[in-house]
Amino acid sequence: MTLHEAIEKVLKENGKPLKPAEIATILNDLKIYQKGDKSRIKSSQISARVNNYPSYFFKDNGLVYLNNWDKVKKEKTSITPEKKEPRKVSAESLNVNLKGNPSEIDFLTKNEFEMIGLLSDLLKNGLPNNENLNRCGIYAISIPNDYFPEYYSPNEAKIRGNVIKPWTVEKLKNKWVKNTDIVYYGLAGKKSFRSLNVRLGDLLRHGNGKISTSGPHKGGEILWQLKNYERFALWILSTGEPPEPRNYEELVLRTFHNEKQKLPFANRQF
Image (cartoon, rainbow, N blue to C red; front, side, top):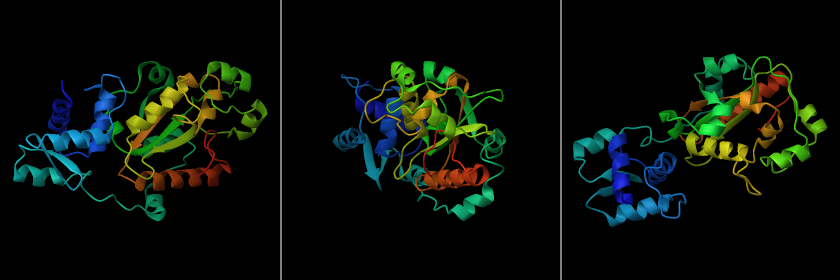
């Protein structure tokens, strides 16, 4: 399959126009098309291929359309979350919608987070095929009810290979938050579009020790210094495009901090 055929396939299956970055994300995550050197496809490559095949595609307001979509189809597909302006969400409006205490699993279920699996399975098998993972959003990591914190020392963490800058056990103990179910909140799409699929892929690669000096998911990496993290669960909540994920995450973290006087264990800043 050629790249332009893969782009055509993605647009047909989604039934609506998409941004080049969204098409690239889907192709990379689902491995519909792979380059000869196995490197990730960039949005610039999607744009270049679209421009070179006017018989297949046309672009309008930053979106890629199939050329055989008629005007009625175009008008219909333009009314999509991707086509709309991002919803400007204030902390005040979000606060009305938050239900419960962000330090508890009950908060996740009440606010329509979706549990997508245990870290043991996700680290081994990767992320599931879930449409919500192709959107921006926030995510949480929860611990089981009977979990008691134990920690990998800096030397143990270095041997395991999934922490760039490990903390001392004493510092980790001081960071632990008692009487909570949640050890981390994160987001995908802080300033520009980034899917949960991409961000959580970074998280799992980091957890598996596929790291550099800067990442790919340096934020929250002390999570991997908790022993038995394989038992932790990963939850997602898809949102609109930026700034909504960041607004939502900041509000959740501030509400958590107001309740516990600490941020979740693996979070370091609002």
